[in-house]
Image (tube, rainbow, N blue to C red; front, side):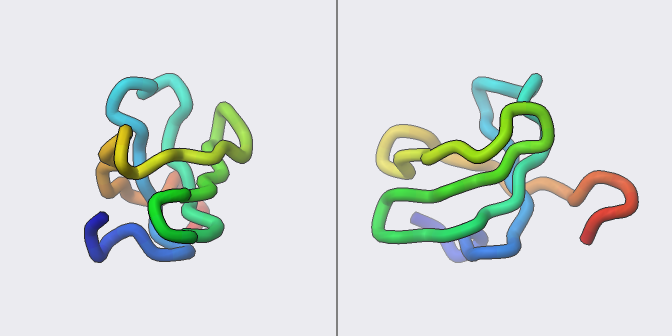
Length: 61
């Protein structure tokens, strides 16, 4: 897990660009809950998926 995976940070799923940017809601071990703009709230396993840093969508910080 990397330092950028903290609650409030914006990320993208590398294999699902259609989900849009997502904001991390919580991090518990390797489990990361992300609220994606076009896919809603999803639980991501950080040992399987390496989330990439992203800019927030316009109008959101």
